[in-house]
Length: 393
Image (cartoon, one colour):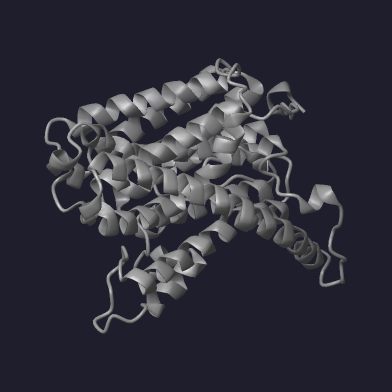
């Protein structure tokens, strides 16, 4: 095995700097939605919250940071795993909080009549919207999303399929580099040729973030070199271009959106470069781990909760106080979901899914469920693989 392909041991220490970045990205998205995307405020957000609205408008760029971090940590969590183990970790992490979030949308709709999805003419619960959303495949099925942020989970699922193929082939340094270059080029070719199927599979608009994140992990694991630097630079250029040319945003902020977007994309790439070169390893406060644990439920639930709070309380509260209440309630509920929904659900699901995967791998022979705390405990707060931005291992 050549030195460039040698699998070097990954550090055991948790990357708490990524927990902090995840939380910052989630908070940016929260402000973007709570301030600018909830109709219950009743007036244009520039008049309603005149200072924070200018900044929060660009909070949707937190999604870009999420995707960049995801490329880093999903490669880290997939390295050395089999496809079955990787799939189990994704299902266990994604679905408990997600199922709760989708159900919460319906429950709050039944109680208040407030929802982000289009209501049926007779006002009944839109079961045909709820069912495909529970699969997390509603975008691909052509169904309506129950919440705005769900589209990003569909993008993540595309990414996981591609990583699973890499894991199935066997992850090495050289294969990773070839995978990244091939994905980047094929995505651009598919976009140029308007090859719809390949565009759907490779999602070239968002792929530069995931590709760059994976390249940053290779820098973190093996050290920097010119090839990785060129991959990251190409991804930065394409990401800045694609993001700055989104038509609807340019209509809202003509002459401003493109420049701010390029600046923000550049900053998040620089931040990830600092992570990859271990320049932020001094961020070791254990509280960042707690913030990281809240990120996924906060991301899923904030708009659902904020919409109801704004609709019901705006006539009775100051705008700034109401915004603060929305954030506090979202954080509190996110913590409760983490403790009371995610943790027990993961503890129950993980050994059973592992047993099922082992049985499938054994050709149908009965395999007893794995036992022991190492198998039954959620990995998020105990291993270095738990630094996934939205969807930790």
